[in-house]
Length: 211
Image 1: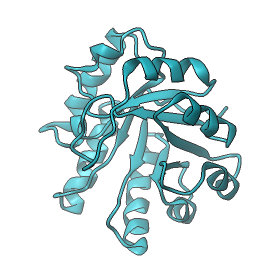
Image 2: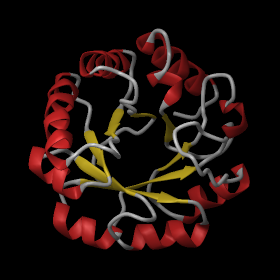
Image 3: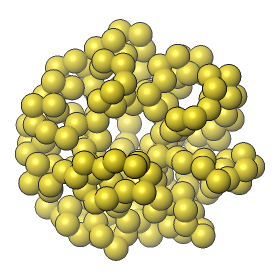
Image 4: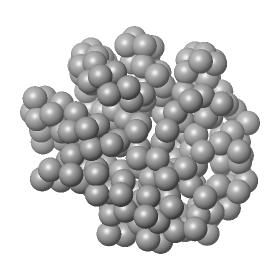
């Protein structure tokens, strides 16, 4: 298994930010203790995505944090990112693994135990499981119960991370579930102080034994 820490997995959202402000917030999150970084861009052209990814990768390397590219294997390969994350409607996991090679991280989304097992069998290195709570980053959110999250954690040998509307005030529901960590977007991205938000979120997760 590849050596990466998904205890505080930060997923970006550049909506309504200038590039300068966006890159600043990404760096502040890393300063605050984010351990894994995913660049998620749904509306940029391939060229724009690559250009931004290169800048984000430069920052991530400074903090020795792996960069995962959401959805786009071509962008991940173009900038030699550490990995890619594929969702249910993206490229098949097995295809992503073949293209990325064995040395890169391939993450996948899973909402059920059979889905999680299939992702593992196809070569996924970790799972994002949720949404635990409704989220503002997606128009349509399908919720995943904490019981299902627990079952997924126990069903596969790869790390499973909770995702979906999580913040320092509501992650108590995850206590006792053997997740590898938590994935957050808005809790850090939209915070007045992303560095402090990341620090407090990580501290609370550690208090609960979640990472």
